[in-house]
Image (cartoon, rainbow, N blue to C red; front, side, top):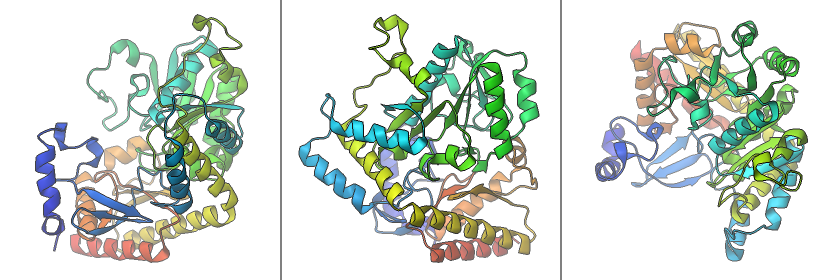
Length: 433
């Protein structure tokens, strides 16, 4: 029995959705040929659709749910806060507790909340321009920083195509695209540019779970110091998948860290943060800069709402108080996952590259062995990856995207889950052989 046999109610819902939603979905990456399934419930590492089918989830709320779906301490805090109120439009004590927890977590001076990772990156770029007095922003091929015009370039292959309609040339000209994990290439691209900032994901997410080399990130830090460039780490995905974030894992301190998703406690919209050094963050300080035209604007109706702040504070406390249990376990699972897949692909002589670090995994059916997004994207067998995705879906194992698998583990996943993923992968490889 395949996907289309056990998900007929989802097919009916999709036909209804197409009447009201462009493409029938709220975000195109959630579409699955020939229709998506509709989730009703999530717990731990499992999700259930409207027909009661149970799936093992490796998408985990776009990577946010590092503690698994429905994590009880966070849910309990949310339930208690609901009795007090959700959003007041006034200051609340949880924004202070949250801010202290976030700045201590990332080892930076000050923070402001935003409503998403996209917003966080927008404000970070604005701060960098104000701080340096320069306009251009360096971003990496394959890097995804949300839907903000000022960073929406060279996201998906082919990288020379516009990432969206409706982008103006004046904005696009201020984005300088850079080669990931290629320090010489970066120096060559920026030598004649005046950059306000370089923004980088320490581990490319949408680009395929490709970790940066430590020397590469260190080289970026040195370059930014030499050229008066603000170094921004986009840690929307990595911020809570490593203790203290990827900046702590790599031992490199950026000027600004942006995050989203999990910083609001995994489950809530209205979650994002701009964390940075005081010299930059104080550009938003209305007490130090009385005139509005002399400071950087930041705001938002739902920024700092009590529910999101309390959930985010609870998440960070859980991660800190259980660090010796959570992070070694995630690393162990991730290493086991990558080792198992590599063994399966090598045994069957299938051209494949398994990337990732910690609890992030990327699977690429390609002949290249180089962890560069351009080479991986240009040589990947997209049709084979789509067949792999459908095979796993038939086995009620789910991840995104069909053409570029990048998966996230949580503490709710088990070694048995990984073994079952491996068994399903072995069956797929046998079938295509």
